[in-house]
Image (tube, rainbow, N blue to C red; front, side, top):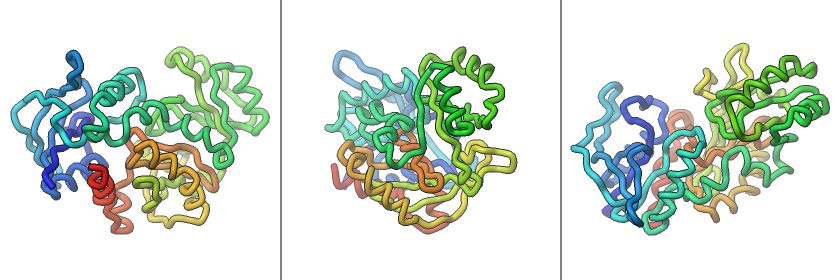
Length: 312
């Protein structure tokens, strides 16, 4: 089929093509003969009811340092595209939220992946609260006394920004909650929204598993092991990816959340599992495609495009 795909992403010249999931998705689209139109979120706009983007025709190759060519800058009406990949990284701020409002004007006539309405309504750290039987004890608040009481109850805690990503701003506090007040003051100064606290899970020392779901079904997993001296296992902060199999508990979690993801048009999702607990459901810009391909030979990008084609 002839398909033209818009790719809304961060600047393409700065990506790591050995690990970037957007690159893998786009390369798979190109291999299927799709036309690619690349633009950044700042080039998305709307005049009257017409949603448009200033961008470039895009050609990709798997060649480090020489991975793309772009055509002349042009403006396209997103209604003329078949699909758009919503793939810029968080922070999940008002800029990000605004792009979901604009993309919602063309979806589903132009299929936006993931569905922008539910990307906006289901931030990663809030969606999990619909599944409290699967998650560790969790508190969302901006109140210091609440955080302190929660930490005392659970012998310490993990404190992190509600809309953060990539492990940025994640802190572990032990049972004495030393430096909680100063950390709280820093959070209050920098962030207007509440924060999230979770009971610390010692199993994180063995890794934080990223399970990838396509159209609500688990297709594989990678384990992310924290670097020495780190609590965070995100690859952005030095976590090491390892080959790992899906467990019965992983499948139980996916069975519980999969129908909702499928219903809300969340085609490509990455969940985080520590031990037996679901900690995040990543719908904005999940990663892990290339690692899963290297470890298990699973072409997740192909599966994503199969699901998209089924909707087109």
